[in-house]
Length: 274
Figure 1 (cartoon, rainbow, N blue to C red):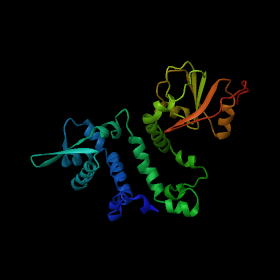
Figure 2: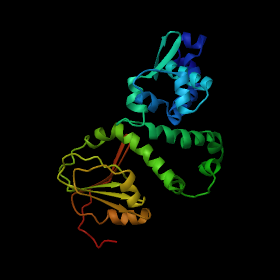
Figure 3: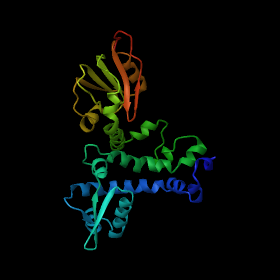
Figure 4: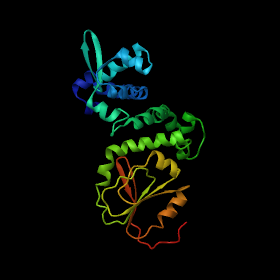
């Protein structure tokens, strides 16, 4: 029972339970500030700004922006100081590093996807449990038997989803790819990847993707330290066929957020390609 794991003070007043219940409000405060451009404005500013100035710059109501900024101060995302009776707001180091879009470690794209896709989906959690099926159609309209057809339903949605994945990669990518010694492999194949983080490996790299290659290279690719090829696959069947063509000493896997999935090393000669 829950009460067995709670202190007497928690039983007298359910602080932790109330924190769980109201947790969505904290998320939505951060989501809204990111969508409105609050963190980007404060990062660009050379001085702390009043709520009125922020509201003017971003085209919002003064009252609404002041409440939002105060909420961000309350959760220690922003800092505030009062000068001559006026509250002046500035970003914390965490906000500048992770929440401003222009930062090298920005989580902005992750936040936008969470706000515009994941958050609406989770509002149908009860329906998902009752019906035992995806709620994409109910949430976003177009029916599809394949969740990835829904995710990739437009170029805008493709880029939004890849922005989510890349935001995770910014934080975890280096630790993921350096967790294993890949120096003995001649070829590294990333199934479904878009940003292949490489070290000074003497190898070639390939990314197998269902996305349009030109779209991938234009918007998502980063410089790579080893020879790189991007191959578009029209579906899982072709992807698996391509994967079977790689020669001995190839490491095939998929790097995603906190997870690194590796298939076995193929022990085969090159077959006739697709």
